[in-house]
Length: 111
Length: 115
Image (cartoon, rainbow over all chains, first blue to last red; front, side):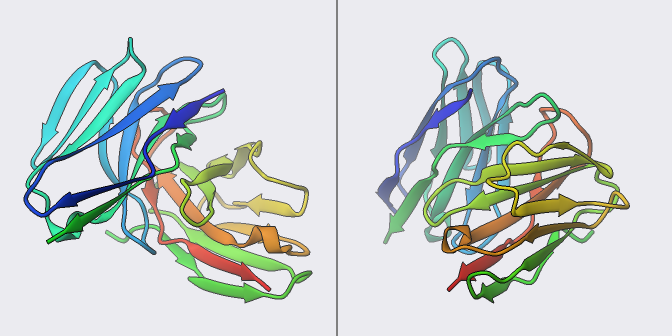
């Protein structure tokens, strides 16, 4: 089976940096996704990591350590619009790439 | 181009009623997924189609849930004799091909409330 853990909620100040951790236990590993979901809206893709290391994409970066079963999403220069839930997910399944999601981390950015 | 669309966006059903939720995936996307998302939780997998073939329905919670994609494009998720525990947001997602690295594009979801 697959198990994904991430903190429930985090609060940070506008302009600051926040790091959202995700630990996973999977039978086999086929990469890890991060999605952003604003309240009442569709999840939108942020990143996909399959190799160890840090991948930077503008203000957002994602890190993966396969040996530790660990990933984090780093949000820099926080803006109010970054207030959202951030979902960690791993693909896998005998018949396709269905995603197993963590519970999501709700980030609240305060002025 | 157009993204994934779902209808209706909101549905209120009385307990025991049947409901049908529609998903229009991105044109040309082979894979289609349905997920159920309870309030404050991450989405949970329900079922997967590759073209018109339903290859995985392991996440459907009971035999009251049924999904189809008869022509390999539009999909319908049907819930019979709705119960209060069925209240959730139902998300549809599509991806270009089968494969773990392919990004899934999500629709806005249908919020189902069973009273």
